[in-house]
Image (cartoon, rainbow, N blue to C red):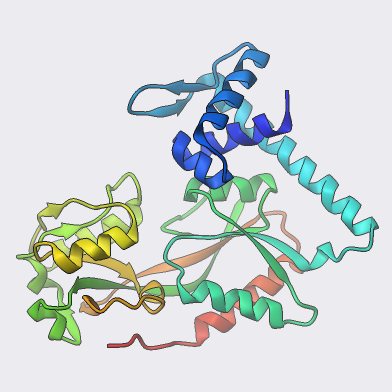
Length: 301
């Protein structure tokens, strides 16, 4: 059994998709499949149930996942211990799980961390929301940004700011001339939004706002990637989607307009930390998030 096999298994278990796991690992998908198959032969059990359309953990895989995470966490702890005894300043480093749509807020948080005395260097890690929480609980991450979560085993959730949710429209659409778009005026436009299983909190927020405005939107295809979405909005039949305001501030797209809504939509961003986290680890992050959350930047019109 090799450590890379364990790492590959954890990535597939978290993403439940071989392609996305390979992207997260920055390696080819065939290598992930081959090493996982070797791990299963070594253990004598199937860890992943593969079908043409789905990837799921088997019962054995579900039992093995927390143990695999513990192995990786122990390895990371050993490395940090050696680095500390070698004189490296590991106490000033945090492993931070990122979240989609943080936009310029993430850059601002990292800047505040670097400006603190002593500076704090953040190692950014990308993983699905559930996996971020599980990594925090297992000690593989010091903290992670999440949204739409109310509780998680072994994790404390701290609200750090509210993210306004904007609508994105073709710049040529009449509603793009409005500084604030009434939700009811979107009733005649199809909505492009991810499937609910991909992001339940965001989908529930948007569809709930539509329902409160008295309509159920027709759904159009969601291309998946943001650049594809913006291209579809710009040149396709008139549709709309949503984007976090902080993310919109970091985008320049002449053919798409981002507008606030009436009533406004917003979602809390939370910092997830382990219940056993020390003040030394959490305090610099909370100070940085507080500084960023208090500084408001208005979106360009």
